[in-house]
Image (cartoon, rainbow, N blue to C red; front, side):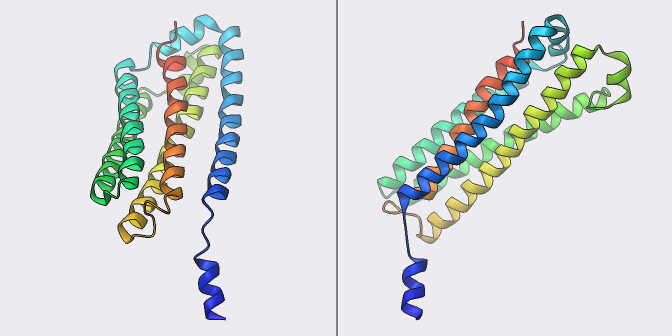
Length: 206
């Protein structure tokens, strides 16, 4: 009985794991794809208001965060390669760098949102409802919802990366059982891809 339980616990199906991750990524793309469609419709209807509202955003912070996520995509991709070469220490170091970059991204976002809140700009605020046009209200509503969802995905991605790093440290994820790290990389690339669309839509609006 114990032997059967051990065999069941030791079951490893990398292909099923990857298929599951791809299906999950597909549902996430549908979610953000729907939000991008909504954004496009409202922007088409309110072009001047969207342009005016976009001037309230800090393009420099948006650009810095874009560079950070691009670098983090590189480091997590490199971690997969180093694991295959049995360089456990290098793999953990690269995952640590990826994690730090993700945290820095969230800190930047925290301060950026903090500036908006200090100016009385948040969904449902009296200042936003009374002093901004309907188009600007729609812009900021989409901004907070979409960047907030993206930040949530960053947090989830960081948790997955930390779990993968822990299991690499323990040896249960290695060059022969790398599906968890590969899935973490796929999810992180999704997070980066979404930001690549969010950055120009909100910060580079012309």
